[in-house]
Length: 549
Ligand SMILES: Nc1ncnc2c1ncn2[C@@H]1O[C@H](COP(=O)(O)OP(=O)(O)OP(=O)(O)O)[C@@H](O)[C@H]1O
Image: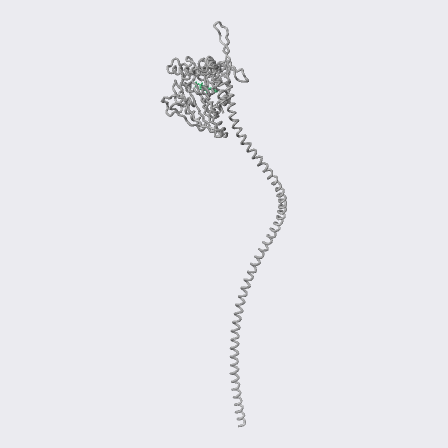
């Protein structure tokens, strides 16, 4: 038992030792376990951390992958676009290549052209040289021709004046005006057969009856006019009378203002050559003097004054290229009852007393206290003319309700200087509308004191004009000491320098076509014939020609 007990005690001890050893081992193992558990825990934490890091990294990689994919897509798109651009560039390049080939061909062609043009240029340069040479030659010729033209112009002036002089210094034109409606009405009125007839045949018959028998037989040169009348003698026999007159030119009733002016234009031109030109319109009241000289308001109806003035301005302008510079001035006077009125004056009536002065040295005539207007254009002259027209003394007579009872004298003075040739000239153009030339009993003036005085004055001055012309004619025929009665009337005294010597005169005789005016027409024709037969100053003409430059 004790053995047992010792055994048990030994067992117990062994067991206790074992237990203690087991405990120590357990503690050790536990410690090892704790340690291992710690390590596991740490490992886990580390692993978790690593996992987390990996996760973060993964997410980062995924984001980067997404971004990379995005970029890839964008790059892909870019690439597509680039490809597209490249495709289009390739197309352009191929197009350009084609164009280039075309251009190359063109360049080759152009080069060929260029070299051809170059050869042409060479030819042209040679031609230009030749032309320059010719141009220099031509320029020299132009200068020579200009010189010749100037000399030709001087010669033309000489010849022009020679022709005018050969025609005679005083020329006479005769113009018969057409029958007017008012003429027929006047005849109707006096014959008492009613003022207007609706019957055209009756109208024609009356027109024929009203007309004087006037014929124009010279259809070539238009120089003759024949008046005829038939009457019954006391014994009942028919008596026929015929009168033939010849003038420088006869104008029939249908003649236009332009046709009349054509004949006068050369004469008007003389004043730009330094001559005094005088154009008179002569004839009984209502015969068409004012119509001839002033004319109507239209271009076609414009009379000799506006046409002559227009021509003078035109010629002056043309002569400018030949070195001529002209200055022009105008005056417009009226002689009424032997008194001078200034038609360009300011007031309603001209109350000033005007005197006529002649400068024997210069041959210039001036009238004191009258307006002399510098003229710059033909249009300005037209304005002056209408101003003067409104101021003219117009009085009624039996024969023409707008009868002008005064002489009107329009004077255009022209001074010219040639800067190239050194020539100078001074001329004047006098356009005179004479008062009606009818006799006393016809004008109905006999019963009216004022009209009687007017008519006497008109007749006095017209016969003074006739006397002056006749005396000038005698002087021209050799009576060098013949006295010329210029002072017998204001009209002749005013026109003294334009009627003699260095002057050219034209008288336009105006005739009425009416049978009732036949006697008056015959008187006018006889006066005009006397004037037409006058030749003035032949000797003077020659000396002027010889001396003129
Ligand atoms: N050639 C013509 N063509 C058309 N009408 C004309 C012509 N000549 C004159 N007449 C007309 O005859 C009328 C008288 O003419 P104008 O007034 O010119 O006469 P006049 O001789 O000047 O008269 P006065 O001596 O009274 O001034 C006017 O109505 C005018 O228009």
